[in-house]
Length: 442
Ligand SMILES: Cc1cc2nc3c(=O)[nH]c(=O)nc-3n(C[C@H](O)[C@H](O)[C@H](O)COP(=O)(O)OP(=O)(O)OC[C@H]3O[C@@H](n4cnc5c(N)ncnc54)[C@H](O)[C@@H]3O)c2cc1C
Image 1 (cartoon, protein in one colour):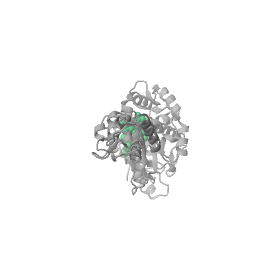
Image 2: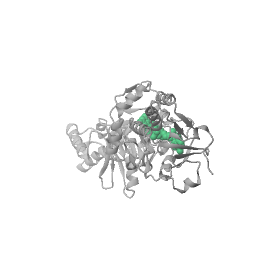
Image 3: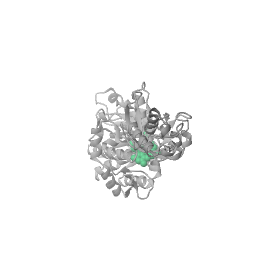
Image 4: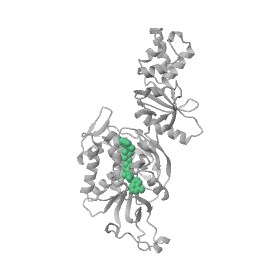
């Protein structure tokens, strides 16, 4: 006969076990503890890492971009927008600011709209969360990796007759150590697959798949892109290492149809491109390849002032009329840093010497210059995960599973990914808030 571990914490079921002490799990623990409002509710927060919160400490370059001053459903991709809207409406960016203040963390907004702690130190955020968890008397079990979740069984099931030590009414959480914990309710907040060395390696998604959940296939998101070396144009992107500039990036199919477009800052690196624009585009490139593998997808770069080649051509014609003998490479320095202007103008001299076809070619280089993207930098460099538990299987008022009553899911595990700028944490806080409160109120 199987029995629960003899450790005191597991002799009777906990009211709530939370698996994963990242941003979402810690938020869920705090809101659950506060919702208990002094009632003797036993909450256990488990994490596989001995010291959880790795991502919080690394986030925002060690400063933790806690949220953004304006967060809308359009800043997210993945699950249905109306569902995302409901989640954000229940706990929005202003609620995050107030909550952080209650935790003792003052935030300041930067001109970009990103909010950081005034200390400019991510540890301020992690310490405040952990302090509140301790104040609320929540039991923490760090360094305890969960390997399996068993759901409550109907009384008449086979398990209930074979294993009388386990209440058929409870969840049973199996730890790697062999120990098992019983819980009346569960919150699963194991993160996605980004930065696997932090402990979020996708095992949580497998645990939920085993319970019947649909896992939308995952790809890295907010990840830098690797360019093919020594390829067009001029094979000279390597020369641009260290260059930062504002660009318009577009994703095009083989027929030249634009699937997605954005404007933002981009940094050329020794491997390819990084910074907000390529990182925000990465999920679209990866999802397009996943969803339409037979199609050829091209990432194109252009100057942000031109919406299309026609506008660039009009600008070139005006420039030609103004100073026809001016070298093109010189003219392009009005738009781009000199190193890039030289590459773009390769093979061309003065506008006056060009025919219409050559000028249109140049206009395309200014607006739709193909970037030879070869791959992404992988999970180790991804800031978040696209794909995950289908939001359609979640009641977004409580983050409770529609398939497994009593089990709530929050954070990056869900099929929702935000753009760069504090949106991932906002999703973690919002979903953690809903899950924590609902789990205790239930
Ligand atoms: C380098 C980097 C910088 C970032 N910067 C920002 C930023 O500035 N602003 C922003 O909004 N977002 C940022 N993000 C994204 C943000 O950190 C994540 O989206 C967010 O932390 C997700 O929170 P989560 O709680 O859902 O998952 P996670 O933070 O991944 O936490 C999941 C936890 O579950 C634990 N766990 C997993 N599996 C198990 C298991 N089987 N048993 C027990 N425990 C388990 C893990 O150890 C981990 O502690 C950044 C991400 C990275 C990688």
